[in-house]
Length: 220
Image (cartoon, rainbow, N blue to C red; front, side, top):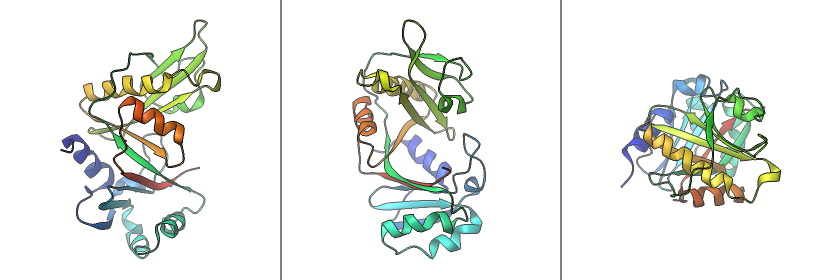
């Protein structure tokens, strides 16, 4: 049975829950407003394998619907131009969620995103981030929570090259997922389809691959 929080999240984040066969292009004012990091996400889609919702700004619905019926690769390639932002890039990958993160031991500490020594990508978050440091305080790995709405929070994780292979990322994802569930939301995890390392982290942290796909147009 699908998590009710997931249904509410996608209905809010996209503008409609994926229901009914085929691709549904829907209008959402959220695609015309800055996202969690202050930047636009002018097109977002989630495809369950049976039904897909492609969310775009209201003034772009007609242009996007004219693309429906093209081969998937051609549709993706045409999206940036169709949403009026040809310099943006296309992302295509897996959409995962979890209501039962793996019971891995906690490894990180929650700290302000303005704390010294953190990489730039963690500083984009306006709330606390989860960080692992070594004995001398050097940053090793971190995770942040993208709070898209009250029902769904997406996790992001990164590990410094020198600290890879220790299992830190999977433990951070599981730990952050437990916090999201405690906050009453469902944790989600997105990664590019060719990112095998991220896929392994997701599986180990309790985010199975259900065959769902997420794609969209993002700033470079």
